[in-house]
Image (cartoon, rainbow, N blue to C red; front, side):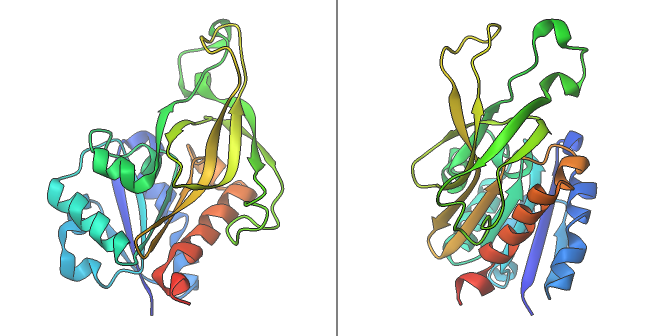
Length: 234
């Protein structure tokens, strides 16, 4: 039986408990024995981590201790899959450069609406946008068969390196109230090989309704199966 570790916490705005709970039946239904931790200190338990096939992380911002970070990196390099969505993986541990290197992309901002249309809550950053599959994404097991899809939610602007394999992108247009002067394309879904481990990052997922979007949920669930050590070893 494969073993999954769900690590959740950090900023409560992303509802880490409710969000991860959405996927527990899926993991159980695919034969995973699931352990849940409310703290990243579990990453520092080398004996436990050696038996974990998949990590699902939902920890926005927060901090991580050196021992835990080293344990996470070692586990992934040894073959443990690592996946998550939105700020729970792409905006975790901002002060830890070694974590950023592991994941390969980091949330920078989510552009907002026209200033006159803002009302002072989170919807100020909810913009209609398209998630566009790349040629690789149209063939990759995580996204194959999906079509480009529309969302109205936070649109992540991501800083990234060239070691990621981009399955989908999203483009930030030029608007008169923004300082940039040409469209910016960010990775929206990507994978990454790290040692023997596979990483899958899905940037949509700000709220439970977005996680329930059929395409978003499909990508996250397929990403769990693809990243798992049991899949990568086959």
